[in-house]
Length: 218
Length: 316
Image 1 (cartoon, rainbow over the protein chains, first blue to last red):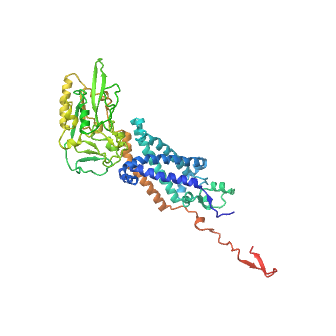
Image 2: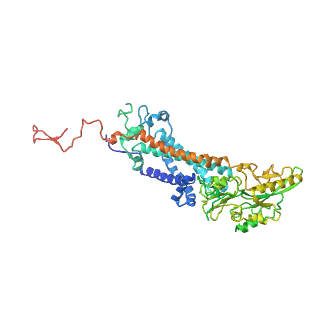
Image 3: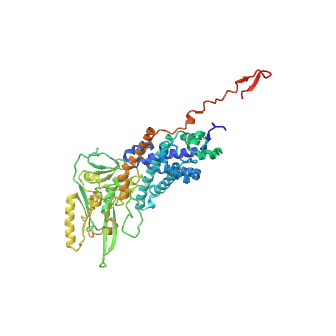
């Protein structure tokens, strides 16, 4: 067995799609935060001033949603919550302490990643719908003031949850060494796959021996 | 010229330049004296150099149909049938109420685009306006409008330029019946009280002053014959308040949201400091814990003297 050949985790299209969404998220997020709190209004200078921030933000948001749909179509099947995931979630405290004893082996995504996926999808949907309602230049005239006020609040709330989720997502990338590489150049080492996504590793390598490296139990 | 009489400034968390003291002013609109001549509308467009597009008649005297970025005040006509079968023609001059607690200012994200002067006037500074329309979302009276020409928000300024130099607003100056008067807020309340006594003596038991507490009082006030039901006057809100949704969004939500995001970043940092990263040992140190077996360079061959030629194969 060639134990040193890396495993492809994300192909070039998947990686490009992810980073397009990431760039659009940063731009939509910074322009949105500029309008959320006075302490962050200076961020509007990154976009050419207040009016340009107001003009660009919704277009950035819609583009982010469209490309995020691309990610959803690519990855939704791998994100169904299973019984195994519930056990993982009950033992998430061990995961947080970098302990591996009693943490069930997982497939391509762990329960945290799957919850992130569905949270992002929900936030994106709320942001899109509420964002259309409060888009003054085109759509607000079709909605009454009650709907606009509710949409404004929901938009801020969904953006808040989305930003918090992405902070967790980015930190997980910093914390779990090797995962950023998977999204940058596409591949992970076999050892990485075994350690973090053992069921997925067995699936892609055809390795039938459970726990063949004798560490999960140790 | 620097402004030194600003007591509230949009999207500003420090004290604005507010060293100058001024008496609070108010415009009092007596709906019971209004004849609906629209001279105030004309005076407003004259003084402020506003020329709205000519619209269409939709079967009412309201002309134009609604407030716009170029129509800052508008007479709204209501035909009200009383319980005794008599018709009342209720005419209300609509426009910015200049709230003591302005919903527009609370919602505005752009520093200095909306300011409140010490005399109570709430003014838009279009130079700082970014055109997001949050002021419309925040306003309990549905007043600000975004211009389709420059995408800035506009509304009645209470002729802040005239008031600053000791003149009354243009609409007040022109009103032929004295239905609109202007002065200090205290004087206007006294004047309103006199009007209300008069109205009550003439059978309007419910006459009263409209100066709603829900927005801290207003610097445009109405004398109404039916102060118990302001709704009659083309939907004047009975109890105007800044919507709780807007309050949540631009009140408590704003600082708490920012705090939580900052806390999440800090939590990540300290998790890294205390628990540390997850590394895969095999990636850090190739072939760990198996030091007894070394792959041998296949160029090293074993010499076996017993074999013919002396040269053996590669080491097994």
